[in-house]
Amino acid sequence: MREEKVFVFGHQSPDTDSICSAIVYTHLKKVLGLNAEPVRLGEINKETEYVLNYFEVEEPQLRDEVSEEVSQVILVDHNERQQSVSDLDKVQILEVIDHHRIANFETESPLYYRAEPVGCTTTILYKLFKEQQVEIEPKIAGLMLSAIISDTLLFKSPTCTPEDEKVAQELASIANVNLEEYGLDMLKAGADMQGKSIEEILTMDKKEFSMGEHKVQVAQVNVIDENDILIRKKEVEEEMNRSVDGNELDLFVLAVTNILSNNTVALAVGEQQQAVEKAFDVSLEDGQATLEGVVSRKKQIVPQLTQVLS
Amino acid sequence: MREEKVFVFGHQSPDTDSICSAIVYTHLKKVLGLNAEPVRLGEINKETEYVLNYFEVEEPQLRDEVSEEVSQVILVDHNERQQSVSDLDKVQILEVIDHHRIANFETESPLYYRAEPVGCTTTILYKLFKEQQVEIEPKIAGLMLSAIISDTLLFKSPTCTPEDEKVAQELASIANVNLEEYGLDMLKAGADMQGKSIEEILTMDKKEFSMGEHKVQVAQVNVIDENDILIRKKEVEEEMNRSVDGNELDLFVLAVTNILSNNTVALAVGEQQQAVEKAFDVSLEDGQATLEGVVSRKKQIVPQLTQVLS
Image (cartoon, rainbow over all chains, first blue to last red; front, side, top):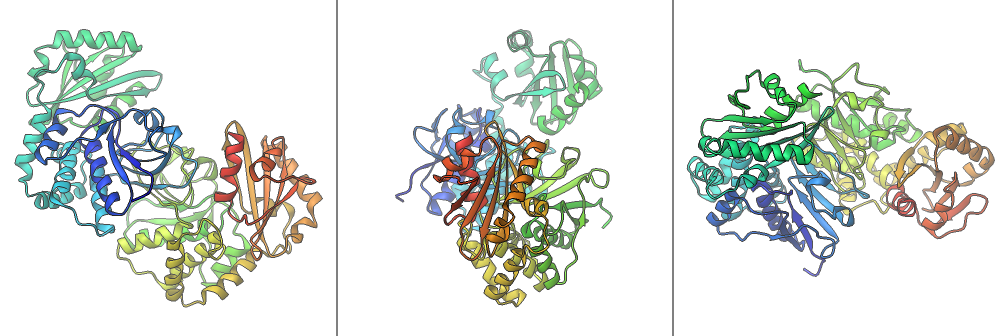
């Protein structure tokens, strides 16, 4: 392979799908003859660390800029500019493989863009392996499976499609793991709050949204026991209030999602706190409410808040 | 099919790919159970008319707005908002099948987006038929073949990939036509300027682009003799100037492309006229220059102008 190198990467604050998709798609592109290399745009979280250890795969190298090393890149699991490398405008985007809405994205030239409204990027990658007739090795299958489990919370999220579940079953058999058992262990590893600072908990998986005239942040954290967080509620709320002041937010919601019960405890601070009450038809008590059956920020939290605040 | 209807359409000032892709993809989606209907966003040109007559296919109905009839649409052969229906923001974009750059495109929700850097949309559609294991009927193959011949100027355009040519060969055998002979007849039918008003010539295949801060339109017309147009040069330029004033354009380029010699004569008006000189390293004489070997707006005109104007 004498061609110039191409970096493959997922979004900032990478989750398991972003890391695994970068590694898996790099593997496929290398088999097809491209000089590809996976990189990551942030720290590996505990869930992803569990996955990479389990399947004995090295973590990609960390980058926040890429244009001094490569002139072409492939994006996986994201397309919005503000979620990508800071110098994206200085490189050519060769391909995008994604399962999100398209926004803040523009290219000068035609490209290969493959998006489908499925629960996980690796569900699309699975099809690309089939289309290219490239065999999926057990290790690669393990990474793809882990991404699906992570993004769909073991098929519990409303973002999960029948296709994601079917692909996951096949991948589990190639990877030779017990899907339920491995999946729960993996999610539990990610839900381990031990040794995490309040700041880490609040920034691990935080996204910002414009809702009507309002600036809103929604952070989400997976737990196996809400009390891991609620025991530190006072400090958490103090830090959330600092964030509201510092970032001029109208609302900051922390969604503490229990991966066993599939309920979410929401903590809300900011002037628009009462939007949570209207959006979910609940009463906040001491800034806190339980949202029964809510696990997906994308489908069950953001649209509901947007509607109330717009 | 009790589902709500979904419109499938290509870009404004439709070319053969936009019309044929809409008809062909509608056919595939109907086979797959969707209540789809093709529409067109402008008049059928002579080339496309030749194609539809040859294969005895009805032209789609004309629309410029769609949101009062449907709430969901599928875009083929384009994605940029300004090339689409005027009320695109009022409907949900279910899918996009395209072979252009991505720009001025944004959705609220995840969607199916399939773009590949090939010469023609129907080359991608060919793959979708294969992936879905739907047989391609002779009539449908004829439309797909015609779109490839049109977009690649019978494989002469630099946008043409080996894949386009291979797919075209297969489609020609399904459609049972002599590729070279049919192709040239079809292109000649499109290059017939007889009875065309200046306004028709300028709007037949016109696209608008944002280049840096500048608003640019590039119209293209295929001929078998440049003089069919140049004999009316004064009137053409007057009409182009009216368009510059009426649409507040910084530059309006008419590319007169000879499908036999594969050269283009460019006429340029507007304040940024000199961008043409820089982009192609030519001197405009009386607003006119010959661009040797240039046949593709997408690959050989728009990127070059964009670079100069950005």
